[in-house]
Image 1 (cartoon, rainbow, N blue to C red):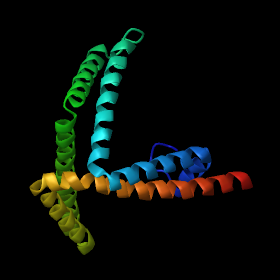
Image 2 (tube, helix red, strand yellow; image 1 turned 30 degrees about the vertical axis):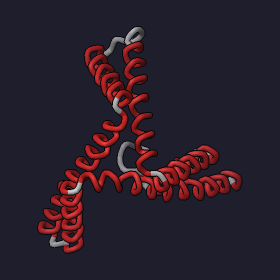
Image 3 (spheres, rainbow, N blue to C red; image 1 turned 90 degrees about the vertical axis):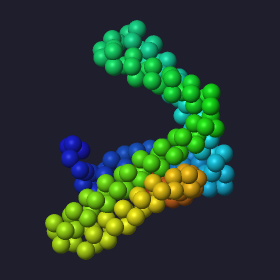
Image 4 (tube, rainbow, N blue to C red; image 1 turned 120 degrees about the horizontal axis):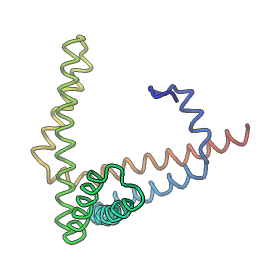
Length: 187
C-alpha cells in the first residue's frame, strides 16, 4: 500500500496474506464479547473498563521503565506515563463511578461527533445540491442531540449497541477466515 486509500485489490491481497486461523480466533473472541455485552451489558462494560484501568496503570509503569533504555521524548513520555498511571489507579480504586463516567464521556464525545458530521453533511448538501446528504445530516444532528440530552440512557444502551456490532463483526470475521483458508489452499 502506498499511503493513500487502498484499492479493493490491494486490500484483498493484504487480507489474503493473513493467517486464516488468526482471523478465526479474532472472530470467536468478538462473538464471545458480543454475547457478553448483549446479555449482561452493565457488568461486561464494568469489567472491560476496569481492565482498561489495569492496562493504563501497567502501561504507564512500563512506559516509565522504558526510559531506562530509550530517553527520546523523555518529558512527553513521562507526562503520558504519569497520566496513564493516575487514570488507571482512579479506575481501579473507583470502578463503579469510573464506569459511569467513562460511558457517559464516550456518549458525550459520540454526540458531539454526530453534530459535527451532521453539520458537514448539511453543508455538503447545500453546496452540492444533494438531498441525500441533507437527510443524513439531519438524522446525524438529531442523533447527536438525543445523545447529549439523554446521556445516561445512551450510556446504558452503548454496551448493547457495541455488543451487536461485536457480534456482526465476529461472525463476519469467522466467515472471512474460512474464505481466506479456502483462497490460501487453492493458491
